[in-house]
Image 1: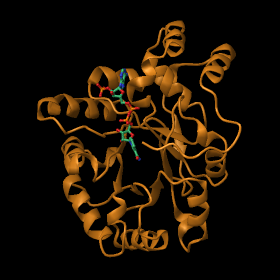
Image 2 (image 1 turned 135 degrees about the vertical axis):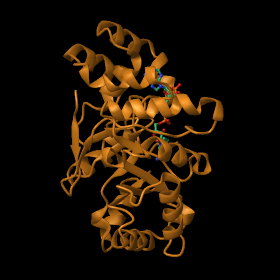
Image 3 (image 1 turned 120 degrees about the vertical axis):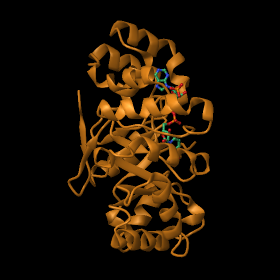
Image 4 (image 1 turned 30 degrees about the horizontal axis):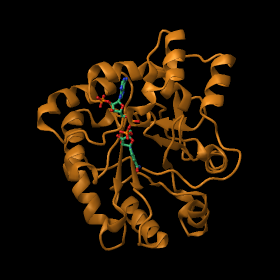
Length: 278
Ligand code: NAP
């Protein structure tokens, strides 16, 4: 089953994409990781998330090898390190990412987190890259509600296409205020670590609900994240087996009892909480 998420500019992407943190780090796993990512593209998980930070460029290189010859099939997301998010440095950082990825343009370029460069300057640098045709659109990651409101005050800030945030069953703080604020602006949330880095998969309740649906814990964790409109989940999987399982996550239809049990065990806060970050 394919579910789409629409950006404010009307561009659609699959709700289920692929993360790549730590992919490409170990040469012994390279072939398997490439096969996994390629299988994910075959199965429609065509949004791929990477970053210049990951393995100091190794993740981008691995992605580049996988998408060689099939650039048009993927929606490519990468991230700039905060220290490179200035007018002086961003263009070179982006050029290097494009080179490692073997592409001429990114579909989405994110500020990885807010550092010392003023957001005004980062927005200017993003706009230059759009003008140069090096990126189609830009967004942010790990920005809390206060920072997002500040961003909207900046000229051009309203062009921010997405905010990539830690979001999974064990980390639901954004449901209280930040995510509704984003939904009101047609700004998708890219949910990172949707499997809790694998830790959620050991939770007895998640395993129990998975058994009820003849599904796997990873599928339950992903389906729980994807039940909300405007969420793009980017699980990282290093094997074809894991990718194939994840691709079927949207087949799960939770009933009321499942949802009540999940919400009781993994409660969303009823007040504002600081943003969770990895
Ligand atoms: P994650 O996707 O929540 O979990 C990855 C773990 O789950 C890996 O150990 C993986 O094992 C395992 N897994 C995946 N599919 C599985 C399946 N079907 N069955 C069993 N285990 C499965 O963690 P993440 O990598 O932290 O987050 C996903 C992506 O979000 C990252 O790769 C990155 O692209 C992005 N991210 C962004 C930020 C940010 O600051 N913006 C921070 C963190 C992550 P295998 O590898 O063995 O398959």
